[in-house]
Every structure is written in C-alpha cells, then in structure tokens.
Image (tube, rainbow, N blue to C red; front, top):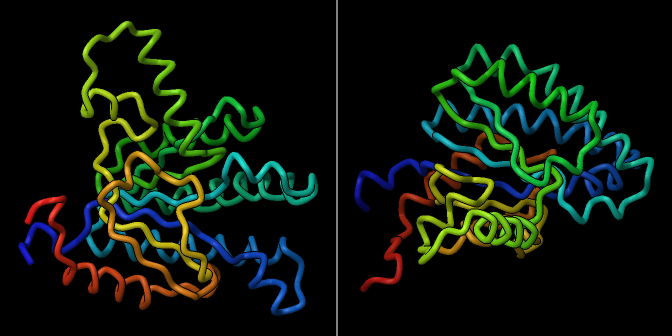
Length: 230
C-alpha cells in the first residue's frame, strides 16, 4: 500500500455499548456513560499520538432525545463535565475541539461551554477532535440543501456541496469504527462515508482499548482503497 495511506487522516467512531456495559455489571446506564468518557480520553490521546489529524466521535444523535428525560439530562451535564475536565489537557496536547450537529437544538448552558472550549483550543495544530452532538446524517444533508437554496448557488458540484456540510473544509473519514457488535452506520456521516473503510468490533465502548484501536489502524494499512478504480 502507498505510504500516504499508512496512517488514516480522519478516523470516525460510533461509540456504542455504554448501556450494555453497565447492565452486564449490574450498574446504572449512567455509570456506563461515565466509563465511556474515560475511553474517549484514552482514544483521543492514542489517535493524536498515532498521527491522526481528524477524529470524529458520535456522542449524541438526533434520535437520542427519545431516551428517558433522566438519561438525556444526565448526558447533557456529563458533556459539560467532560469538556471542562479535559479542556486544559486538550490545549496542552494541541488538540482543536470542534462540535458538529444541529447545535441550535442544544440547551444554552451546554452551547456556552462548547463555544468557550472551541475558542480556547482554536490554535491547536496536532489534531482536530469533532464531537458529533445532536447529530443526524439525514438532517445534515437536508440542512445543506436548504443553505444552498438560500445562497442561490447555481450548478452545484460535489466539492461545493461538501462546503455546506457540518464537516466543511475537512477530509472525509478514511475509517469508521463501530463498537459493541452492531454493524450499521445509524445515520452517521452518510454523505462523507461513501468510501470509508468500515471496521466493526464486538468490544463495548468502555472496554475499547488503545491496543485494539492501534490494531485497527494497522489493519487499515493492508486494505486496498481503489475509490471505484481497477
């Protein structure tokens, strides 16, 4: 494989299995989410050290609002705690924090913390960490079409269309990883994932280790990416 594919530029992860991890241990779902945050820190550090330039984590989907009010409220406040708790470390490591999704649909207290963290880390050059929150792939595409209609752009092409997505000016993911044994994209990066290499693991997200992550990066090197060519 050509050297330019040795390390994926953009890795995206569907972090699945927090609830099942907790259930297996007789714990509350909240404890599973707390354990999942620790894995976020671990994998973010591993990705940056490996040379990945963009890491996108699927944290909260547009469908997750269907969960109980108690769980949703816990998650929203957990995001605040996690951002505040890891902010200094992200700055020190040169990680730029970014948020993608329908952010206007989030409560003000969370948006305020997100904007502060984004400003504080904007000079980071090691890696961009995208947190997909209140994110839905179909909604992203529909909103992009609305923006295009409002802009009156004519003869739109694929490259122009990408500039209206949440991930404007970012490369498409080379790899999409999903933990917990499920094998579907669940409305995640639908437009951007056209040629992404997919990796599925039975490991529940809180148990997903740096070693398994690096093993996937190693396996990626051996995949032949033809992008439709011979």
